[in-house]
Amino acid sequence: MNKTGPIVIIEDDLDDQVILAEIFKELNYENKLIFFGDSILALEYLTTTDIEPFLVLSDINMPKLNGMELREKIHNNEDLRMKSIPYLFFSTSAEQKHVIDAYSRSIQGFFIKPNSYEKLKEIIVKIVEYWQECESPNYIKNVQQ
Image (cartoon, rainbow, N blue to C red):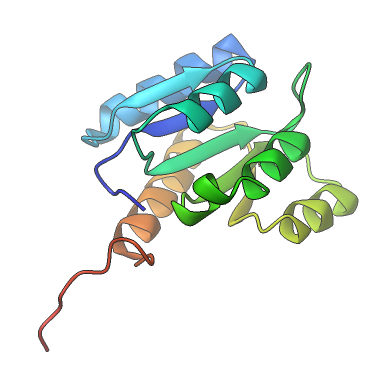
């Protein structure tokens, strides 16, 4: 995982895009944000760019290609799978079936979008800080103890 890479946010709700952009701006992370309101365009970007994103945050309920279908296409793409890009779901609700389906597709996290701006901000901080500390096969630091 490329910790300095962009954060790809796949969200068809423009209001949610604005809120997430505000939160990331407040948190002052150096990662560029790339928004997609269309999961097919997001898939095209992920499969054609040489840039390795740091994280993918995806809504589940989207037109054309829903989040589960998108995740499956990404997971089945060997080049993308080898990049070890953390893929997390954000959804307005969580049915047990969705959570089970998500984790069966090797999702790295499933989060409910809270109604509170501050709570959403707290979740974003936890996610970004966790993945900044996490190691991945392609980016192992040489840590001296």
